[in-house]
Image 1 (cartoon, rainbow, N blue to C red):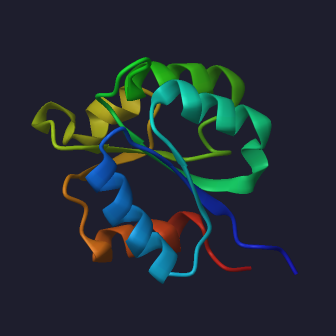
Image 2 (image 1 turned 30 degrees about the vertical axis):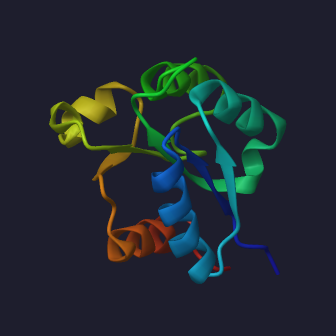
Length: 127
C-alpha cells in the first residue's frame, strides 16, 4: 500500500501558514512548511517524491514564488510535482498566466477550506 503524498506549503505570512496548515491537518494529510521560496526549494530538493502538491505564495522575501518555481522546474518536471500559486494578487488569478510561470493553477487568498480540500483530493489522493 502506497502512502499518501504530503503537501509542501511555501508561505511567508504567518497567519496564512497557520490557517492553511490547520485545514490540511484536519484532512489528515501530512504538510511541511517553508517560510520562503529558498527554504521551499531546499525542502523539495531533499525529497521531491514525498510531495503530491506544492502550495506556493508568490510574493516572499529572499526568493519569490515565481523564482522558486523556475528553480523547481529546472529540477522537477511539471507533471511530477504540481505547483499551485496561492496569492491575493489579481494579476495572477489567471490560469494562462500562472501556467506560463510553470505552475499548474492558482488559488485566491484567502483559500477556502473547501478549495484546499479539492486541491488535496486532486493531487494527493489516498492510494
